[in-house]
Length: 202
Image (cartoon, rainbow, N blue to C red; front, side):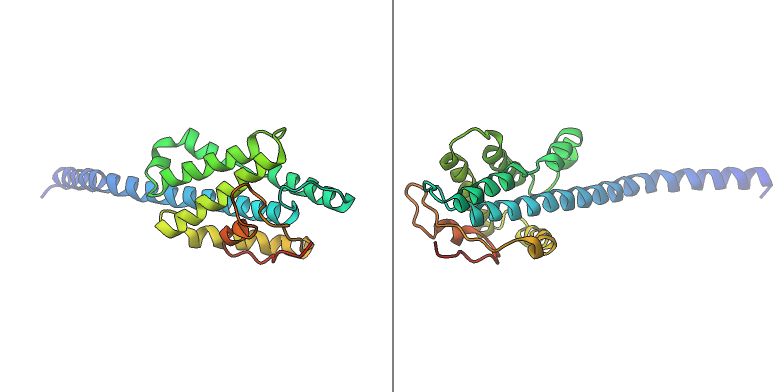
């Protein structure tokens, strides 16, 4: 076989190998991007879950506050609530919607972020309404845990990482109880997964 034939054969083999490898390369790239996206979303959700837990720990429910210390606690709770971030979700759902929708739990992630947005969007709303929205987030996550529709292990892994970074700086406050209309006093505490800030008696 002359050099020209060898070169032609080699080029043809290279072209075939390239055509076969391209779909595999695309799948591997998409799989990697999906993993990075899911991890970033759960990291943000874990932080938000942690912050919402701190809201419950510091806000004294929805009762009227008389003491200055209680009012300061409520202000801290509002600060935690106002710190909720939706940035990762908005980025991925906006700029890479197709890949986002290919996640197995995309629909439930969308619903969870909608509930978190509701809890944080109107800062001028009465505290009872904002607290009810926090309750709804915990109730939704609890339902997802029961139905197996959200990766709870990954959520709690990221939540624990955030808690470990902040726990040394956080005083251990507890909520007065979930005085939400129609809810028993302990209901909201029972909804919070893996909480290590036990409620204190007031």
